[in-house]
Length: 139
Image 1 (cartoon, rainbow, N blue to C red):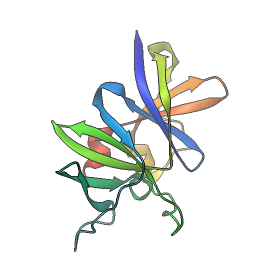
Image 2 (cartoon, rainbow, N blue to C red):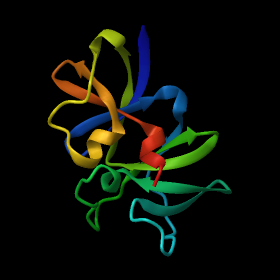
Image 3 (cartoon, rainbow, N blue to C red):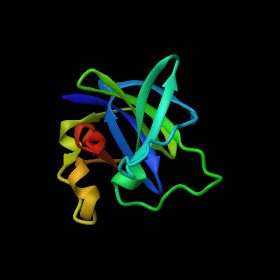
Image 4 (tube, rainbow, N blue to C red):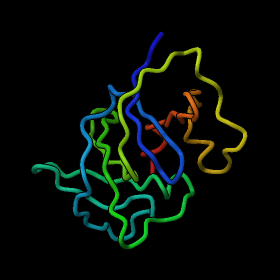
C-alpha cells in the first residue's frame, strides 16, 4: 500500500508528514511571540485573518536554533481540525512511499527526536523520517 508524504528538511535530515494532514506550505511569515509560552511555540501567525500557532520543530527535535539571518519556511497542517504551522528549513516535494520501505526509527535517533518519529522510509540514497504530527505539536 502506498502513502503520500510531503517532505521537508531540518538540518541535514529529511522528514515527511502525510499529505492529507497538510493544508499548505508557505514562505516565512511574521510571528508574534507569546509571553511565558514554551520555547517550542515560536509564536502566533496571522494567516489571511486566521490566527494559528507556530511550532518550532528544531526545538521539538533537540536541534540547534535558527540563526538570526535564517528565515524558516512553514508547513501548515491540521491537527484535530485545527491548523498549526510547523517551522522547517526547506520544503521538499510530495513522495509516494510503500509500506515495505517502512522501518522502526533508526537507532541513531535519540532523546526528543526518537519520541516524535513514527519510523523511517528507505529511499534511494537517504532516509525519510515520518513525523508524528500529533506529538510534534503537543508543546
